[in-house]
Image 1: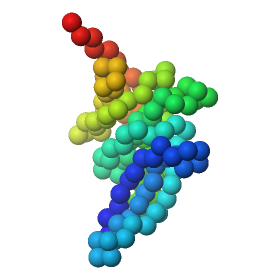
Image 2: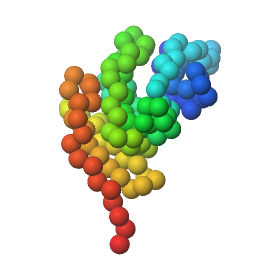
Image 3: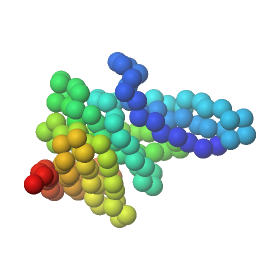
Length: 134
């Protein structure tokens, strides 16, 4: 049995992150869980027992964008924290091997940022760069 995590731009209560099991023998998928997120998760990455999500800048009530971290417990997700860096949305994430930093990039506007992690929570922005062409 394999576990798959899927981010969804579904409308209303359909948006969020889904945990799905895949039975290799029967070739069947089964929804285990859905976490409805505060914004649309555009990119997710798993590192050890933590799933990180980049949120799209689409929710004006929340000010959109940002990052989230989820603890994985027996294939179920539990929100660890959300971090909103002033409405910035990202399209790619990378986590350091020691789980002390998460790096984010947005190829639409050419920006990159780094954040400090503590106990798998995103605690502060360390740097942000908006790259400009010549």
